[in-house]
Image (tube, helix red, strand yellow):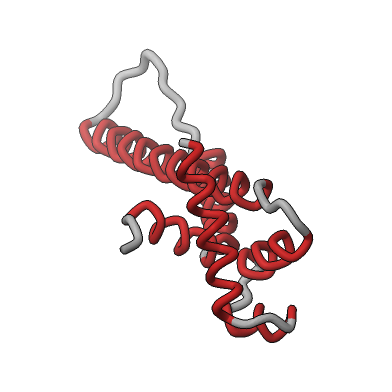
Length: 128
């Protein structure tokens, strides 16, 4: 039985491109919505809008940190590939290819693709 961390890493590997795109989107949104504060009198609507933006920014920062952690973990797994075949498998899957497409492309079995990814994940989880 695979642990929840193992299954989550599998999903992160398969969704790596999505994670990168979402990280970039959130980063850009945080950068574009800097809230200025001053010693000026604010109306109640302005205060509520300011608090709303602050809450949104906090949520976005949490998302950014979570995506950053996931991306870093997948990058560690990618870096831990010890031979060319493992390297090719992990990069095909992180580029968005399915297990079947990866197996066909590299002329290996789907079981081998699963085994390689599982071994890389297990090795990284053991290092923690």
